[in-house]
Image (tube, rainbow, N blue to C red; front, side, top):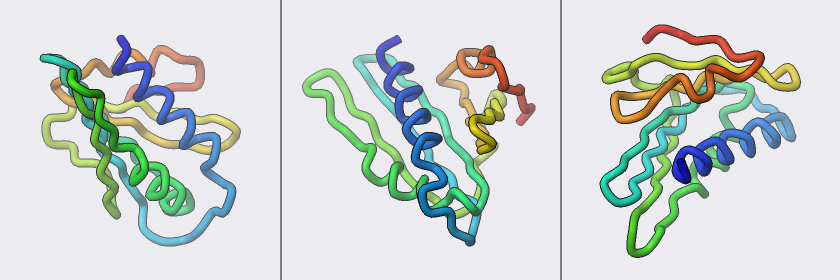
Length: 123
């Protein structure tokens, strides 16, 4: 559960700073993988063009080591999240800002989609 808490904290931070300086451009995505011991969690956060600059800044500062047990990596990309291996996504809206978090075979998508204002999205 610790790894999911860290992922949820990153998502909350992204939504909180999302519209400080909204810009135009390409949609953006941030693929986050966290490994603690034998447990791996992978998600990808996808935002519209107006939020891509903020996601890029947040994503690029999110890779961390948890010695000796594990690591967390985050990789930003212009464009949507990959649907390869996805078990579905969850579109969330907070303060008028929407984003979709995609879950992969190594994680559980029901965790965030059970929150009010969240909608499950098929891959």
